[in-house]
Length: 454
Ligand code: PMP
Image (cartoon, rainbow, N blue to C red):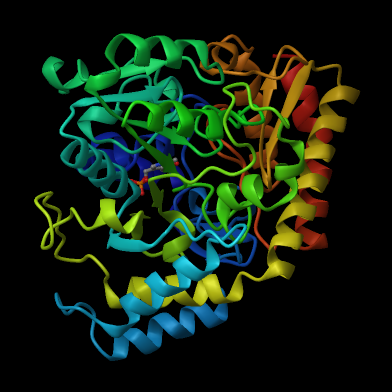
């Protein structure tokens, strides 16, 4: 017998805060009852009522091969038979570190000289900023409005989608003294960054930036922006931490950095950088990974310059640890996913992203809904109410967000599961085949009409 989503939700709310273990799952901004999922395969997820949806959430990024890829599942099963967790070092962790170092390369440069495995993206960024502070002996951190780097205290100011969905400016419970050490700047402009460095350059440990922001919808960096941030930080003895938790191994085999430094975006960079530095070609000091690197299991990492990474304990004075760090099952899932994610997979992701985003845009246009489509590699999202592409968080927040809820529910009724917030990116997988795309396309006219009449 199946249990309805509504019954499940009622039961969950009695024993779990809000009925969910991560806030955006609660459908707060789109309303209605969250679907309680019981299985997932390829491009589909199935809820507790037995209804199947084409999934454009992809577990918020990890599922680039589609859900439950047979080879990944087999690797997990095989690893599980040999032990669930050792709390000791394993050969496979070194395999993964080597795989990442070799794979992230542009122009002969391998920025990930050393890698440390953790369990979540939150831990990866939290450790990266502690490391930057420990190495520089400075406390101040620069982040950008609308960028999400996980939920550690220093990084929760103006942190994009999750908070925006709930209309929260910042989290309660973050000590004022901690918040005061984080300077939040508007994204995609350099003057504000230069001004802060001119004023307080010798106090700043690091800039942390999403490689291509996708937690306020997708807002790609202006050409040369990340390179300029690297130059400004380095000119003042600060580090650049590039957060590729979401983009790493998803937008391309070497993440966003690969696209910008060796891939198609390298050609788009201005010859003369606005800052007078060398563009293309920037090397971040630290990079954080999550999502795809664990193939759907709890695994994340931080990596970068060996001389910086070697400040981590046991070699250095910056402490970091984890009972489940480098968990053998998660590592097996990650290695297998990365090995399967070859050029064909990225070509499929790119093609599907273009087909789906173009179809959505056409349907909105036919229904007379002003909108813009933002793309960063195979990540994409939409803003409603204007055809002007947003450049920063303020632009994103100025949209007609109310048009998204009816759009979302019409798609859900049509058998398509979208991210339950207008501030999230959409995620395709290499398993989204013609049948899945056809179902998406079939649901679009009704959803666009619902958005138009909102
Ligand atoms: N950084 C970025 C760019 C992210 O998108 C996320 C999660 N969406 C995180 C960090 C935090 O990762 P986790 O949810 O695994 O803690």
